[in-house]
Length: 307
Image (cartoon, rainbow, N blue to C red; front, side):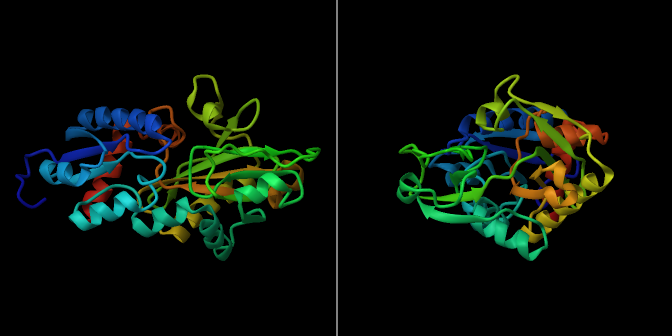
């Protein structure tokens, strides 16, 4: 690290907060990562990302930026582009991979080309979705470029009327065929799938189920056949590579066990997975013997070595 003694701890700026709908989740992730990195021996600065971010990053002069932002701007390639422009090393995926993964429609195209199964979907005007069924029920309506189950509507098979989307939904949305079955997820670190977790909830794995106490239960390793475990791991690594991800990612799946392997489909890949010690990716890292400070250290060192 140019300009620093080998005895000087690398300086890490942890980016958190920001303007997206997932601000509170990002603040929680950022604080946890900052504490873990201090335990791991780094010189850590916490930075709530606002309009003055370029000046504050330049003033901080970090060796690496730990990106703990979630949602738009933080994981869609925008802040990554800013850090490229400033010439800063940063964790997680780069501009293109971040933009691709956040755009669910384009991500699905990349998955199809990599031989990873996805469900049928269309991009439609929200006004049209409110007026008629653009796909035969059951189907799901979601923003094409948000995360953490923000603004997800499930239209059941018996639904007579189309969904009345809130005014907060974007003008164009993704409508996809509903995939029944069990919720499975796999974190990928570098080129390694860490494990398969089943997420157990009483209903849809929405924002509250993800982030409120008691909203969901994580079963690791998931009690699935070896064939499904292996396929989940394989698809997650292939998705990571197809999008061009770096560092840590997490891919989510649905599995209809009545259909065997044919019932497994990928939902999406998250380039900035939640980063508290009880979040899904850190839980999988812990399951293979990597505690939370060690996971954060790996992410930082990978970014430092990448240059």
